[in-house]
Image (cartoon, rainbow, N blue to C red):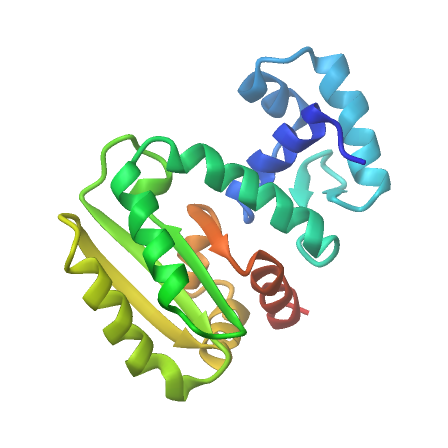
Length: 198
């Protein structure tokens, strides 16, 4: 069972999957005593949520604990949706209209970090490529009822694997690692990332 402090720590790590931090940096970010963060971190390392490298830097273990990481992602989403009601309504409409058993729905880019945003950057990952065009039509149709600009990327699962596997390549999925909110399919997002980066 994760403590409130451990959940807050993991929220930082899932929001910046590619980054490494020291215990001191996490302590400063959360404005919590170093001793509390250190103690909480030891349990996260022991339970393989976090890796500690030879330089004493910490990084997220995105290859295990998929359901817990998905839970952390959902906590971040709840916080983010309180700032913009129109986005909340848009996402509810999208999730209601998508009749897929497998999909991942995330927002990345400026919306995840700022109170004001110019456009909404969305990635949807589907199980097959042949559903991409129809899904794009559905989402664009819903977006036409809202005032914000939409930057939509719909991909098949195979394309997602390929993008994640090219770690150094600049692409939307690699960009999403450090600026995202996963609204649906968190476990699948981490599973694809893990399998692509074996």
